Image (cartoon, rainbow, N blue to C red; front, side):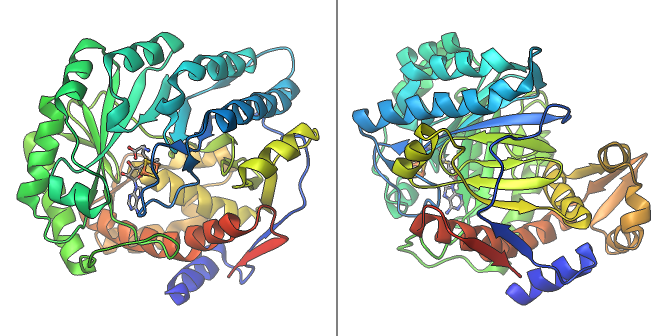
Length: 419
Ligand SMILES: C[S@@+](CC[C@H](N)C(=O)[O-])C[C@H]1O[C@@H](n2cnc3c(N)ncnc32)[C@H](O)[C@@H]1O
Ligand code: SF4
Protein backbone atom coordinates (compact mmCIF):
# COMPACT_ATOMS: atom_id res chain seq x y z
CA UNK A 1 0.00 0.00 0.00
CA UNK A 2 2.66 2.46 0.99
CA UNK A 3 4.39 1.73 -2.34
CA UNK A 4 1.54 3.57 -4.07
CA UNK A 5 1.68 6.67 -1.84
CA UNK A 6 5.49 6.63 -1.88
CA UNK A 7 5.65 6.44 -5.69
CA UNK A 8 2.96 9.11 -6.11
CA UNK A 9 4.66 11.44 -3.65
CA UNK A 10 8.03 11.06 -5.35
CA UNK A 11 6.46 11.60 -8.77
CA UNK A 12 4.36 14.63 -7.84
CA UNK A 13 6.94 16.35 -5.64
CA UNK A 14 9.68 15.46 -8.16
CA UNK A 15 11.84 14.37 -5.24
CA UNK A 16 12.60 11.39 -2.99
CA UNK A 17 12.54 13.72 0.02
CA UNK A 18 10.09 12.25 2.57
CA UNK A 19 7.70 14.30 4.70
CA UNK A 20 9.88 14.90 7.75
CA UNK A 21 8.01 16.20 10.80
CA UNK A 22 10.12 17.34 13.76
CA UNK A 23 9.49 18.67 17.25
CA UNK A 24 11.26 21.99 16.54
CA UNK A 25 8.85 24.89 16.19
CA UNK A 26 8.48 28.63 16.78
CA UNK A 27 6.03 30.10 19.28
CA UNK A 28 4.88 32.71 16.77
CA UNK A 29 2.84 31.75 13.74
CA UNK A 30 3.15 33.94 10.69
CA UNK A 31 -0.37 34.19 9.24
CA UNK A 32 -0.89 37.96 9.15
CA UNK A 33 -0.92 38.24 5.36
CA UNK A 34 -2.31 34.78 4.67
CA UNK A 35 -5.32 34.82 2.35
CA UNK A 36 -8.29 32.49 2.53
CA UNK A 37 -7.64 31.48 6.13
CA UNK A 38 -10.09 29.29 8.08
CA UNK A 39 -10.21 28.54 11.82
CA UNK A 40 -10.77 25.21 13.55
CA UNK A 41 -11.35 24.55 17.27
CA UNK A 42 -11.17 21.00 18.64
CA UNK A 43 -13.44 19.98 21.54
CA UNK A 44 -12.46 16.42 22.53
CA UNK A 45 -15.34 15.47 24.87
CA UNK A 46 -17.91 12.73 24.22
CA UNK A 47 -20.62 11.06 26.33
CA UNK A 48 -19.40 7.61 25.32
CA UNK A 49 -16.50 6.72 23.07
CA UNK A 50 -17.38 4.97 19.81
CA UNK A 51 -14.94 2.19 18.94
CA UNK A 52 -14.86 2.91 15.20
CA UNK A 53 -13.95 6.59 15.65
CA UNK A 54 -10.30 7.66 15.15
CA UNK A 55 -10.53 11.22 16.46
CA UNK A 56 -8.86 12.62 19.57
CA UNK A 57 -11.57 12.29 22.22
CA UNK A 58 -12.06 11.57 25.93
CA UNK A 59 -15.01 10.85 28.16
CA UNK A 60 -16.83 14.01 29.30
CA UNK A 61 -15.78 15.22 32.74
CA UNK A 62 -16.80 18.65 34.04
CA UNK A 63 -13.49 19.43 35.79
CA UNK A 64 -11.52 18.44 32.73
CA UNK A 65 -13.79 20.59 30.55
CA UNK A 66 -13.17 23.66 32.72
CA UNK A 67 -9.38 23.36 32.68
CA UNK A 68 -9.38 22.53 28.96
CA UNK A 69 -11.41 25.62 28.07
CA UNK A 70 -9.14 27.78 30.21
CA UNK A 71 -6.12 26.51 28.24
CA UNK A 72 -7.95 26.82 24.91
CA UNK A 73 -8.75 30.49 25.56
CA UNK A 74 -5.06 31.07 26.36
CA UNK A 75 -3.96 29.36 23.14
CA UNK A 76 -6.32 31.58 21.11
CA UNK A 77 -4.84 34.58 22.95
CA UNK A 78 -1.26 33.51 22.24
CA UNK A 79 -1.87 33.04 18.54
CA UNK A 80 -4.40 35.85 18.05
CA UNK A 81 -2.51 38.59 19.90
CA UNK A 82 0.33 38.51 17.35
CA UNK A 83 -1.93 39.73 14.55
CA UNK A 84 -1.62 43.45 15.36
CA UNK A 85 -4.17 46.17 15.97
CA UNK A 86 -6.46 45.36 13.08
CA UNK A 87 -8.49 42.17 13.30
CA UNK A 88 -7.63 39.44 10.83
CA UNK A 89 -10.38 38.49 8.38
CA UNK A 90 -10.98 34.72 8.22
CA UNK A 91 -13.46 32.79 6.10
CA UNK A 92 -14.91 30.36 8.60
CA UNK A 93 -14.81 28.98 12.12
CA UNK A 94 -15.57 25.30 12.72
CA UNK A 95 -15.94 23.48 16.04
CA UNK A 96 -15.18 19.78 15.63
CA UNK A 97 -14.54 16.92 17.96
CA UNK A 98 -15.36 14.93 19.87
CA UNK A 99 -18.76 16.46 20.47
CA UNK A 100 -18.57 20.26 20.80
CA UNK A 101 -22.31 20.50 21.51
CA UNK A 102 -21.65 18.85 24.89
CA UNK A 103 -20.22 22.19 26.02
CA UNK A 104 -22.90 24.31 24.33
CA UNK A 105 -23.04 26.76 27.26
CA UNK A 106 -19.32 27.51 26.97
CA UNK A 107 -19.19 27.94 23.18
CA UNK A 108 -20.06 31.64 23.42
CA UNK A 109 -16.92 32.34 25.49
CA UNK A 110 -14.73 30.68 22.87
CA UNK A 111 -16.44 32.64 20.08
CA UNK A 112 -15.97 35.88 22.03
CA UNK A 113 -12.28 35.11 22.39
CA UNK A 114 -11.96 34.40 18.64
CA UNK A 115 -13.84 37.64 17.88
CA UNK A 116 -11.22 39.64 19.79
CA UNK A 117 -8.68 38.93 17.04
CA UNK A 118 -10.57 37.64 14.00
CA UNK A 119 -13.55 38.61 11.85
CA UNK A 120 -15.35 35.51 10.58
CA UNK A 121 -16.98 36.24 7.21
CA UNK A 122 -18.73 32.99 6.20
CA UNK A 123 -20.34 31.76 9.40
CA UNK A 124 -19.67 29.40 12.29
CA UNK A 125 -20.15 25.61 12.14
CA UNK A 126 -20.42 23.09 14.96
CA UNK A 127 -20.77 19.28 15.33
CA UNK A 128 -23.47 17.60 17.39
CA UNK A 129 -24.39 14.08 18.40
CA UNK A 130 -28.12 13.35 17.80
CA UNK A 131 -28.65 13.30 21.59
CA UNK A 132 -27.63 17.00 21.70
CA UNK A 133 -30.27 18.13 19.26
CA UNK A 134 -32.77 19.66 21.66
CA UNK A 135 -34.61 22.96 21.26
CA UNK A 136 -32.85 24.33 24.32
CA UNK A 137 -29.33 23.48 23.15
CA UNK A 138 -29.93 24.67 19.58
CA UNK A 139 -31.18 27.99 20.93
CA UNK A 140 -28.06 28.41 23.11
CA UNK A 141 -25.82 27.66 20.11
CA UNK A 142 -27.72 30.01 17.82
CA UNK A 143 -27.51 32.82 20.35
CA UNK A 144 -23.76 32.22 20.65
CA UNK A 145 -23.42 32.88 16.89
CA UNK A 146 -23.44 29.37 15.38
CA UNK A 147 -24.92 29.45 11.85
CA UNK A 148 -24.29 25.89 10.61
CA UNK A 149 -24.69 22.58 12.39
CA UNK A 150 -23.62 19.05 11.50
CA UNK A 151 -25.24 16.06 13.23
CA UNK A 152 -23.46 12.68 13.37
CA UNK A 153 -26.35 10.39 12.44
CA UNK A 154 -24.21 7.61 10.82
CA UNK A 155 -27.39 5.72 9.92
CA UNK A 156 -31.08 5.92 10.74
CA UNK A 157 -31.25 2.09 10.69
CA UNK A 158 -31.12 0.42 14.07
CA UNK A 159 -29.10 -2.59 12.77
CA UNK A 160 -26.26 -0.28 11.68
CA UNK A 161 -26.38 1.80 14.85
CA UNK A 162 -25.98 -1.43 16.80
CA UNK A 163 -23.11 -2.49 14.53
CA UNK A 164 -21.37 0.82 15.25
CA UNK A 165 -21.91 0.38 18.99
CA UNK A 166 -24.66 3.01 19.27
CA UNK A 167 -27.95 2.08 20.83
CA UNK A 168 -31.42 2.83 19.52
CA UNK A 169 -32.15 6.55 19.37
CA UNK A 170 -35.47 8.32 19.39
CA UNK A 171 -35.35 10.88 16.59
CA UNK A 172 -38.80 12.41 17.17
CA UNK A 173 -37.46 15.02 19.60
CA UNK A 174 -34.52 15.79 17.32
CA UNK A 175 -36.80 16.43 14.32
CA UNK A 176 -39.09 18.58 16.48
CA UNK A 177 -36.15 20.67 17.71
CA UNK A 178 -34.90 21.15 14.14
CA UNK A 179 -38.32 22.42 13.07
CA UNK A 180 -38.25 25.03 15.86
CA UNK A 181 -34.71 26.47 15.59
CA UNK A 182 -33.38 27.34 12.13
CA UNK A 183 -29.81 27.39 10.90
CA UNK A 184 -28.40 28.38 7.52
CA UNK A 185 -26.99 24.85 7.12
CA UNK A 186 -28.26 21.71 8.83
CA UNK A 187 -26.01 18.87 7.74
CA UNK A 188 -26.21 15.20 8.72
CA UNK A 189 -23.29 12.72 8.61
CA UNK A 190 -23.72 9.17 7.31
CA UNK A 191 -21.29 6.30 6.88
CA UNK A 192 -21.48 3.93 3.90
CA UNK A 193 -19.73 0.64 3.18
CA UNK A 194 -21.22 -1.17 6.19
CA UNK A 195 -22.08 -4.86 5.61
CA UNK A 196 -25.19 -5.45 3.51
CA UNK A 197 -25.85 -1.72 3.00
CA UNK A 198 -27.63 -1.11 -0.31
CA UNK A 199 -28.52 2.01 -2.23
CA UNK A 200 -32.17 1.52 -1.18
CA UNK A 201 -31.15 1.73 2.48
CA UNK A 202 -29.00 4.81 1.86
CA UNK A 203 -31.75 6.51 -0.17
CA UNK A 204 -34.08 6.07 2.82
CA UNK A 205 -31.47 7.69 5.09
CA UNK A 206 -30.95 10.63 2.72
CA UNK A 207 -34.68 11.24 2.32
CA UNK A 208 -35.30 10.92 6.07
CA UNK A 209 -32.63 13.61 6.56
CA UNK A 210 -34.04 15.96 3.89
CA UNK A 211 -37.65 15.47 5.07
CA UNK A 212 -36.79 16.33 8.66
CA UNK A 213 -34.82 19.55 8.71
CA UNK A 214 -31.52 18.80 6.93
CA UNK A 215 -30.56 20.74 3.79
CA UNK A 216 -27.12 19.13 3.41
CA UNK A 217 -25.49 15.78 4.14
CA UNK A 218 -22.07 14.13 4.22
CA UNK A 219 -21.70 10.48 3.33
CA UNK A 220 -18.31 9.06 4.30
CA UNK A 221 -16.93 5.68 3.30
CA UNK A 222 -16.19 3.62 6.40
CA UNK A 223 -12.45 3.89 7.16
CA UNK A 224 -10.83 1.07 9.08
CA UNK A 225 -8.03 2.67 11.10
CA UNK A 226 -5.42 0.32 12.59
CA UNK A 227 -5.98 1.67 16.11
CA UNK A 228 -9.82 1.54 16.11
CA UNK A 229 -12.07 -1.45 16.64
CA UNK A 230 -14.45 -3.03 14.16
CA UNK A 231 -16.85 -5.83 14.94
CA UNK A 232 -18.06 -6.54 11.41
CA UNK A 233 -16.77 -7.65 8.04
CA UNK A 234 -15.82 -4.77 5.76
CA UNK A 235 -17.39 -4.26 2.38
CA UNK A 236 -14.96 -4.91 -0.48
CA UNK A 237 -13.57 -1.97 -2.46
CA UNK A 238 -15.47 -3.17 -5.54
CA UNK A 239 -18.76 -3.12 -3.65
CA UNK A 240 -17.97 0.32 -2.19
CA UNK A 241 -17.18 1.64 -5.66
CA UNK A 242 -20.54 0.38 -6.97
CA UNK A 243 -22.35 1.99 -4.06
CA UNK A 244 -20.56 5.30 -4.51
CA UNK A 245 -21.64 5.45 -8.18
CA UNK A 246 -25.22 4.65 -7.17
CA UNK A 247 -25.24 7.36 -4.48
CA UNK A 248 -23.91 9.97 -6.90
CA UNK A 249 -26.38 8.96 -9.67
CA UNK A 250 -29.28 9.06 -7.24
CA UNK A 251 -28.34 12.51 -5.91
CA UNK A 252 -27.94 13.95 -9.42
CA UNK A 253 -31.34 12.50 -10.45
CA UNK A 254 -32.92 14.25 -7.47
CA UNK A 255 -31.22 17.54 -8.37
CA UNK A 256 -29.03 17.59 -5.26
CA UNK A 257 -25.76 19.48 -5.64
CA UNK A 258 -22.45 17.76 -4.92
CA UNK A 259 -20.35 20.46 -3.23
CA UNK A 260 -17.40 18.25 -2.29
CA UNK A 261 -16.27 14.66 -2.60
CA UNK A 262 -18.45 13.44 0.27
CA UNK A 263 -21.10 16.15 0.62
CA UNK A 264 -24.34 17.08 -1.13
CA UNK A 265 -26.75 19.90 -0.55
CA UNK A 266 -30.47 19.92 -1.22
CA UNK A 267 -30.63 23.22 -3.08
CA UNK A 268 -27.00 24.07 -3.69
CA UNK A 269 -26.85 27.02 -1.32
CA UNK A 270 -26.03 25.38 2.02
CA UNK A 271 -22.46 24.35 2.75
CA UNK A 272 -20.63 22.61 5.59
CA UNK A 273 -16.96 21.99 5.08
CA UNK A 274 -14.17 22.40 7.59
CA UNK A 275 -11.43 20.98 5.38
CA UNK A 276 -11.50 22.85 2.09
CA UNK A 277 -9.53 25.98 3.02
CA UNK A 278 -6.23 26.88 1.42
CA UNK A 279 -4.85 27.70 4.90
CA UNK A 280 -6.15 27.20 8.41
CA UNK A 281 -5.27 27.77 12.06
CA UNK A 282 -6.22 25.01 14.49
CA UNK A 283 -6.77 25.42 18.25
CA UNK A 284 -7.08 22.68 20.87
CA UNK A 285 -5.58 19.24 21.31
CA UNK A 286 -4.92 17.37 18.04
CA UNK A 287 -5.79 20.46 15.96
CA UNK A 288 -3.72 21.02 12.83
CA UNK A 289 -2.56 24.27 11.27
CA UNK A 290 -1.76 24.63 7.57
CA UNK A 291 0.01 27.78 6.40
CA UNK A 292 1.91 28.77 3.26
CA UNK A 293 5.20 27.29 4.44
CA UNK A 294 4.29 24.85 7.20
CA UNK A 295 1.99 22.23 8.65
CA UNK A 296 1.78 21.66 12.40
CA UNK A 297 -0.19 19.43 14.74
CA UNK A 298 -0.94 19.94 18.44
CA UNK A 299 -0.42 17.27 21.07
CA UNK A 300 -3.26 14.75 21.53
CA UNK A 301 -2.68 14.57 25.29
CA UNK A 302 -5.08 16.82 27.21
CA UNK A 303 -2.88 17.18 30.29
CA UNK A 304 0.25 17.90 28.29
CA UNK A 305 -1.74 20.36 26.18
CA UNK A 306 -2.66 22.35 29.28
CA UNK A 307 0.84 22.07 30.74
CA UNK A 308 2.49 23.47 27.60
CA UNK A 309 0.07 26.37 27.40
CA UNK A 310 0.38 27.20 31.07
CA UNK A 311 4.14 27.37 30.59
CA UNK A 312 3.59 30.05 27.91
CA UNK A 313 4.32 27.86 24.89
CA UNK A 314 2.25 26.64 21.97
CA UNK A 315 1.17 22.98 22.31
CA UNK A 316 2.72 22.03 18.95
CA UNK A 317 3.91 18.42 18.85
CA UNK A 318 5.14 18.05 15.27
CA UNK A 319 5.89 20.51 12.51
CA UNK A 320 6.74 20.12 8.84
CA UNK A 321 8.49 22.82 6.81
CA UNK A 322 7.26 22.37 3.25
CA UNK A 323 9.39 22.24 0.18
CA UNK A 324 7.60 24.19 -2.54
CA UNK A 325 6.54 21.07 -4.41
CA UNK A 326 5.30 19.42 -1.22
CA UNK A 327 3.13 22.47 -0.56
CA UNK A 328 1.77 22.30 -4.10
CA UNK A 329 0.74 18.70 -3.53
CA UNK A 330 -0.90 19.55 -0.22
CA UNK A 331 -2.71 22.41 -1.94
CA UNK A 332 -3.95 20.22 -4.79
CA UNK A 333 -4.96 17.37 -2.50
CA UNK A 334 -7.07 19.56 -0.21
CA UNK A 335 -8.61 21.77 -2.88
CA UNK A 336 -9.55 18.65 -4.88
CA UNK A 337 -11.97 17.94 -2.03
CA UNK A 338 -14.21 20.57 -3.57
CA UNK A 339 -14.09 18.56 -6.87
CA UNK A 340 -12.49 21.52 -8.65
CA UNK A 341 -9.10 23.14 -8.93
CA UNK A 342 -8.95 26.69 -10.20
CA UNK A 343 -5.83 27.70 -12.21
CA UNK A 344 -6.17 31.37 -11.27
CA UNK A 345 -6.33 30.57 -7.54
CA UNK A 346 -3.27 28.33 -7.87
CA UNK A 347 -1.38 31.14 -9.63
CA UNK A 348 -2.40 33.61 -6.92
CA UNK A 349 -1.23 31.24 -4.19
CA UNK A 350 2.09 30.17 -5.69
CA UNK A 351 2.86 32.92 -8.23
CA UNK A 352 3.40 30.10 -10.75
CA UNK A 353 1.17 28.50 -13.33
CA UNK A 354 -0.62 25.23 -12.52
CA UNK A 355 -0.19 24.02 -16.09
CA UNK A 356 3.53 24.73 -16.14
CA UNK A 357 3.99 22.68 -12.97
CA UNK A 358 1.51 19.87 -13.55
CA UNK A 359 0.63 20.11 -17.27
CA UNK A 360 1.44 16.45 -17.99
CA UNK A 361 -0.57 15.14 -15.02
CA UNK A 362 -3.57 17.30 -15.93
CA UNK A 363 -3.40 16.11 -19.55
CA UNK A 364 -3.26 12.49 -18.34
CA UNK A 365 -6.18 13.05 -15.93
CA UNK A 366 -8.25 14.45 -18.81
CA UNK A 367 -7.36 11.56 -21.16
CA UNK A 368 -8.32 9.04 -18.44
CA UNK A 369 -11.64 10.83 -17.90
CA UNK A 370 -10.85 11.90 -14.31
CA UNK A 371 -11.27 15.65 -14.93
CA UNK A 372 -12.93 18.00 -17.41
CA UNK A 373 -11.71 21.48 -18.18
CA UNK A 374 -14.28 24.25 -17.73
CA UNK A 375 -12.84 27.70 -18.45
CA UNK A 376 -9.99 28.09 -15.97
CA UNK A 377 -11.12 25.21 -13.74
CA UNK A 378 -10.43 21.49 -13.69
CA UNK A 379 -13.62 19.77 -12.58
CA UNK A 380 -13.49 16.21 -11.24
CA UNK A 381 -15.80 13.64 -12.87
CA UNK A 382 -17.60 10.87 -10.95
CA UNK A 383 -14.93 8.46 -12.24
CA UNK A 384 -12.24 10.85 -11.02
CA UNK A 385 -13.94 11.13 -7.63
CA UNK A 386 -13.87 7.35 -7.23
CA UNK A 387 -10.12 7.22 -7.92
CA UNK A 388 -9.61 10.20 -5.63
CA UNK A 389 -11.45 8.27 -2.92
CA UNK A 390 -9.26 5.22 -3.64
CA UNK A 391 -6.10 7.30 -3.32
CA UNK A 392 -7.40 9.15 -0.27
CA UNK A 393 -7.98 5.82 1.42
CA UNK A 394 -4.31 4.91 0.85
CA UNK A 395 -3.28 8.36 2.01
CA UNK A 396 -5.44 8.12 5.15
CA UNK A 397 -4.07 4.72 6.06
CA UNK A 398 -0.42 5.42 5.33
CA UNK A 399 -0.18 9.07 6.47
CA UNK A 400 -3.00 10.02 8.85
CA UNK A 401 -3.22 6.60 10.51
CA UNK A 402 0.54 6.59 11.10
CA UNK A 403 0.57 10.12 12.50
CA UNK A 404 -2.49 9.75 14.73
CA UNK A 405 -1.34 6.35 15.99
CA UNK A 406 1.97 7.88 17.07
CA UNK A 407 0.30 10.97 18.53
CA UNK A 408 -2.11 8.85 20.59
CA UNK A 409 0.84 7.03 22.15
CA UNK A 410 3.31 9.88 22.66
CA UNK A 411 2.35 13.43 23.66
CA UNK A 412 5.46 14.94 22.08
CA UNK A 413 7.22 12.58 19.65
CA UNK A 414 10.73 13.49 18.55
CA UNK A 415 10.01 13.16 14.85
CA UNK A 416 7.92 11.41 12.23
CA UNK A 417 9.18 10.50 8.80
CA UNK A 418 6.60 9.52 6.23
CA UNK A 419 8.28 8.07 3.17
C1 LIG B 1 -16.36 14.02 15.22
S1 LIG B 1 -17.56 13.02 14.57
C2 LIG B 1 -19.17 13.80 14.65
C3 LIG B 1 -19.83 14.44 15.83
C4 LIG B 1 -20.42 13.64 16.95
N1 LIG B 1 -19.36 13.34 17.87
C5 LIG B 1 -21.12 12.38 16.58
O1 LIG B 1 -20.48 11.33 16.60
O2 LIG B 1 -22.30 12.43 16.33
C6 LIG B 1 -17.32 13.32 12.84
C7 LIG B 1 -17.82 12.29 11.84
O3 LIG B 1 -16.76 11.45 11.39
C8 LIG B 1 -17.31 10.29 10.81
N2 LIG B 1 -16.49 9.12 11.19
C9 LIG B 1 -16.03 8.79 12.41
N3 LIG B 1 -15.31 7.65 12.34
C10 LIG B 1 -15.31 7.25 11.05
C11 LIG B 1 -14.74 6.14 10.35
N4 LIG B 1 -14.01 5.19 10.97
N5 LIG B 1 -14.92 6.06 8.99
C12 LIG B 1 -15.64 7.01 8.36
N6 LIG B 1 -16.21 8.07 8.97
C13 LIG B 1 -16.06 8.18 10.30
C14 LIG B 1 -18.73 10.15 11.35
O4 LIG B 1 -19.65 10.27 10.28
C15 LIG B 1 -18.85 11.30 12.32
O5 LIG B 1 -20.13 11.85 12.33
S1 SF4 C 1 -18.16 9.34 16.60
FE1 SF4 C 1 -18.60 11.22 17.70
S2 SF4 C 1 -19.46 10.55 19.68
FE2 SF4 C 1 -18.43 8.80 18.80
S3 SF4 C 1 -16.38 8.89 19.71
FE3 SF4 C 1 -16.29 9.89 17.69
S4 SF4 C 1 -16.55 12.00 18.15
FE4 SF4 C 1 -17.27 10.88 19.96
